[in-house]
Length: 325
Length: 90
View 1: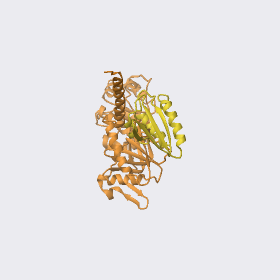
View 2: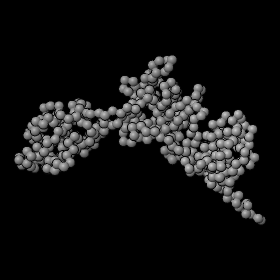
View 3: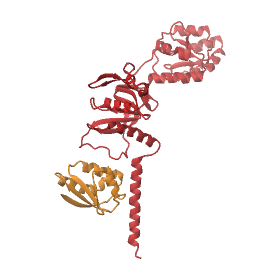
View 4: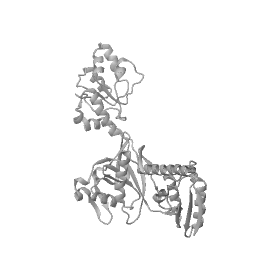
């Protein structure tokens, strides 16, 4: 899995989000000296007051009502100093919220330092919240992985295994039984919080290659009900050719996991051989996963039953042995 | 055909995890492996069969191995039971 680091050009950020966030450009140019490189924001209120210790200047700077009220309360000389402090570092951009007016010299100073300034009518808290979501999504760790992702009874099963082991055939069989294909062969994975979400590459979406048949489009063949754009990956099903000398899990008491983008995901290694019906096993994996989430673990229950049985037998035996009547 | 008698030394008996260990080890051999307890004989390569024995601490089992690698199987199984499946040591 290959991870890549990204930067967000302020121009691209503006073009991508100006409609959703209602952004207008106040400076004459959107071209700045710094790209957005981190998904965090900073409110430079303390910088305006003169406390420069912790100026996180690489972040998107947000000026809300508090900052602007403070700024407007200053006399001309103090305003000049405040602006000097604000632009003492290279900034990627400044966004003013609540449609607040900016004094002319503010824009002038920004242009002098090549810092694009944008404005939105949105209320500050809501704006910050939405902005964080947009930036988080843009900067989320992501990778591409070889495998197939299917939504089986609402559980995201990611099938991995060597080429030619029959992943696509399993996917096809599952789709035929009413489950939904997310992506076959190439899965783009994005991390969101402690979840990993998979989807297909845009131009490959829902196309599949079936050996001996060629390229098919799942949506055309099976209809809209057979596809899904993205799905959280909950279980990795690793398909392995059957090998009698290998230790296959026989009880499932210990949950094994694998890491995707630093997130732990349940992993099962399932043996496969010609004529074996993996589809039914895949459905069972999905249903059993749901049962475990709801607190029902069959392996643990059986183990408990067994231990209880042996315990009670031991007691009965002791009773009978001591019974001399 | 080879036959050995073993005793369960594990305090909690052959619970599911140990049954898994046992089944895994038996499945490594080509020979047919059966376990007998109280005149009941089961297939040692099936986990649910092993679990059905409910072999508690101190119970005596007879292992019957039949096949080309029965010698290795018998010696491995004898060690396994003697060491209590190395439970808690792994």
